[in-house]
Length: 600
Image (tube, rainbow, N blue to C red):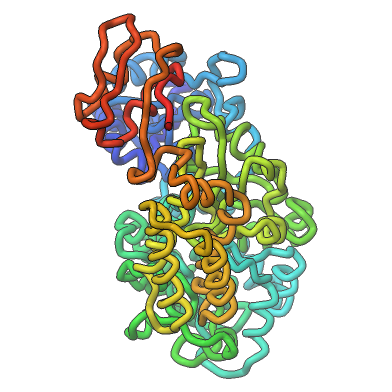
């Protein structure tokens, strides 16, 4: 095939794209090559990869070295891609991405507005390698950092390098990673343990899942380096049981790492021994908290413990333990390979490096992004995320998972880093960002998250167990028209008590959704309580719709989408809505393109 023998076709087979038949696309292209009597590992190479990040436009097929990226591929496109782009180097115009700002089609991901402002470090291999092929990882400097650490650095030098990088834990708390390692190393109690927190339970978050599925060896290498640094010989990766593909890929990567001598005894002839086991989590949100996670590994009920005993001194089975999340581990090989000065030059002074975020909710470009710390929310949401679906008005972004806060439009120019988000009443969390538009009721948002947290509370401490329960009762009353003016002050009092007295970090941060929505959207609470109206038209007991006769053009879209047949009217004549029949589902207001359906 001449030059085509070097061609590589990369098909995204992350969980999102698999749900959209990407495995069928991968199999179809592979069969095309086999039918031609060619070797798929030589001419051309057909590979399944982890998540490309741009989930909104998946499945994605990338052809290298031509640097062609195709989006929203269907199985029916297989023949054309193979005949034109794989065999003949032709570009299929209709499958290219169109940049919103220019309206122009772009061939390369480098020119795609979604990718252009990103800086991929933790995600650098994902979408570029086959996660089941350890040679792919090695070819992109995989296990190079481990060799450097074992053969050219002392354990103390490794710890010093990580500390100097300024890397802070990416799981939510943002504790300096190097300090944690240094404290654990200072204790001469053995055995010591290295733990990876892959129990990603936040609604709308899938950053860690993507790394575990798409680049499992980076996690293994990071844990190995830590094991060497703190003199540990055992590691555990705790993965939520729902992440079946992540469990499969991590397990396979561990097996291959053992075969290559990167795990086991006398690693690379250094005398260092280290092994890793997988522990499957049962799906409890609280097990994302470090001490609850370790209790779960021990076979106990996943409940947190008081933090005056640090895990670095007495963690897993009462022994010194370092626990970091998936993204933190993926950064370790990069720091050892490139140096702390390189890493600390990225981001801000107190929040170095990059951060992976999942952009979900009412945003055009749903997906995973990795950006330098310090980027503004506006750039993240509008320049990379493409703005709000339907060009509706942006209302808020909820960051940091269910325990995070809601940040209003007036703060869109805030820098995204640990300290700034905390000062604004939210938190970095693990990196989930849920975008909300004008049709989002902020009281209902607070109620939703408090309901989630109340259900997931382990119930061990009274402030969290009873505080969340009482807040939920008050918020339900407000959303159902039974709110009283004194409810706001009572909510604020319960929030203060819970954040001060709860046992673990999850309980202490649980009031954030209520605190932040009262702080920034108090007018919506007052509208619910005093006016008995829901301005967004979400709370059914406080909502009524009408069609503005001066605006309606009689297009019939609302009528067509009304499941209760509550809308009547002839084509091209203003329509009317019968509130006696209306079930307040909101389909009419969501589908109207002319803003003719309004909330009374």
